[in-house]
Length: 280
Image: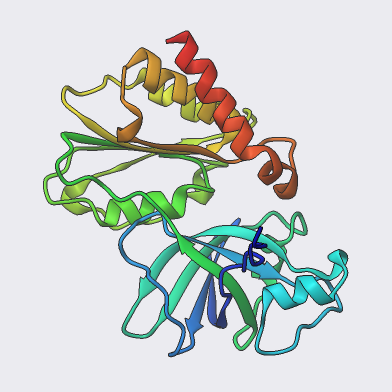
């Protein structure tokens, strides 16, 4: 029997920080310039995402950066950690990619890095991936999420077709975390202030209270996994929205580190889907 060759990882791309901007007290935008030879396919979707690769403190890698070589030659504790982030915008003419980071002091890995990032720093990343963009033929659109989904929701609002009917809900900590989003035809975002409530509680309540318009919806619903589970049930079972008209998943899980959540995310989502299909 012929032995299969080892599966190679996707090629990592190189980017350089060109500037940063503090959007709100807890949101920082980092704009990266991509090398001219870096071939990336960004533009089809409004939820394009990349996996940023962070080297452990004190570890550097030889160039050209080769993730497979790193994993073959270095111990696991020296492998780069990855964090998934939405591409907020892509300027093809200048080859600049903007990514928005939620920052809560020294909590986490990517947020503190973004708060300290300076022009000239370099970053390697994998991707992009993605799969959602507003459906032009939809009768109306539902966009719902928290800070983690805000970049994709903002990008989606900016790409809505003229005359689109949109209900957009974004849960943030408080009024200081609201952002200015350019929307077509006066579409407005309903900002939900979390305050002392649990993440996702205000978002679930707002979507439950929405009087759903007639016709077919195109929905994008992402955020904390527990609240997304409730919204999935509401949309799939209570409103009978078919799966193919939904982009819905938990970007993060309360009480779980990024690594812990990624380790169980696929199985958790599949289990939720099975449970709700059975309930339906």
